[in-house]
Length: 139
Image (cartoon, rainbow, N blue to C red; front, side, top):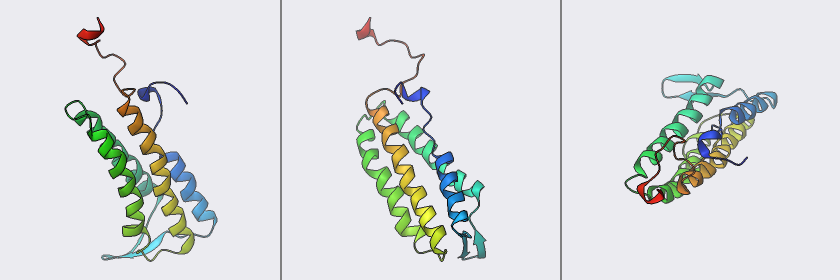
C-alpha cells in the first residue's frame, strides 16, 4: 500500500491474533510455568505485547529523529534484533508446547515485517504530519 505513513495502518495486532488462533487450532495451549506458578498467554496479552512496544518504539523514534535523524538507522538494526532476540530469550526457554512456541515465534517475526517498513517510512520523511507547516526553504 502506497501513501504517507500516517495514512497506513502499521500495527501488527490482527496478524498476530491470526497466528495466535492458528496456534490454538494446531493444538497449542499457550500454558507455561512462570516464577509465580502456572500461567497462560491469552489474546489480550498477545495484542498488548505486540501493539504497545511497537507504538512506543515508533513514537520514540519519530520524536528523536527531529534532533538525531540517524536514530532511524539505529532503530532499523536494533528493533529486528530485539524482536528476533526475544524469541531466543523468552519464547524458546518457556516450557510452552510446540504449537504455542512456533506460533509465538512467528508473531515475533511478523512484527519485524511491520517495524521495518514503518521505520523506513520515518527515514524517508513519509511519517511527517499531514498538517505540518512547510519549511521556510520550501516557500
